[in-house]
Image 1 (tube, helix red, strand yellow):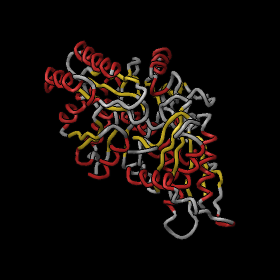
Image 2: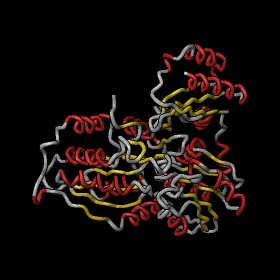
Image 3: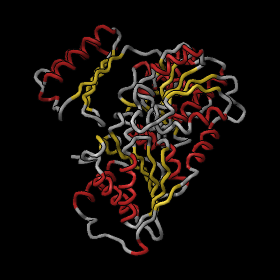
Length: 447
């Protein structure tokens, strides 16, 4: 059983176990202990999003790392992919992101990158937990000049902006394009508007005034309706909504219709196929992606591989099999030829480049895929729920699956980031699948 780590690092309400300063300091010590496998000074990058609690977690992590004789490079608020980039470009031994991603401001979390910019595998996370709870580090305390130091890296934001602009084709520009951009009052507020403006776009911004408490609040990728309304109001060409730590992208077309990660993956995969840059003609996504994406990939002459939910599992499968592109319906898009993790800003630039090259609006490009009706129901729980013990639950799911046949599916899983059981039902008839999802949700809530 894991004690601290979930599907995407450690996450919880800030200042309540496990997201306490005491645990953060021990996590810092454990990371430092693991990276000290060679001679010379060692360095770990720490970045964060805009949550008020980020200050205390940042200081606790830095203290723990320095107490083990490893130096800290503080980059301040920066998107998760930017921290992965800085970790590799500065040849640091590890990178730490302080963020709870799409969660509300009172939550916080810790995600860790290794020196190559990839998230830690389960095995290393288990090693960190063992170091913390076994007290193996208790006697290891460097003194005098062996204690670590911390310093700020003032140009981290500029380095990431240059990286993003270099992704966009030099023969193209965004001149004449009007973009509504929602930064979710999160880590992208100081990056994304500058990138788009420097490439020539007219940008109407939303969610660019973080106050430590408004991250993800009725804005960003979780609440794209705000962006969609602004697109309709201003007559913009497209709307882009990022999440709190900048690794997700949700889009709306020029009519204000929301376009999810599945459709963005479909049209990006088609573009990569035409360029012969989609390795093995394969798109990697998760069990949550719509069946319509499978069909779209088959029609392009490609195929789709599914993994467990979580962008880290998508990346692991891509690396294991040598694939180049993947993502999640939620808006994580991973272009492994460019960066090691999901990047909402990079995904937006790839999409904008396709629009410019083909001179077509998103509403037309998104027709590359037709979605099956899909219902997602989140059932909040007060503790662990064993679905196997729920009376008649398994029997009910089996009966529903038989009714849906090959033209639908049911997925029930526990969230790895919050106390929620997710019920997803997909099929041809909206009324039928909604009724099924409601019935399963009620059984879980009542169990």
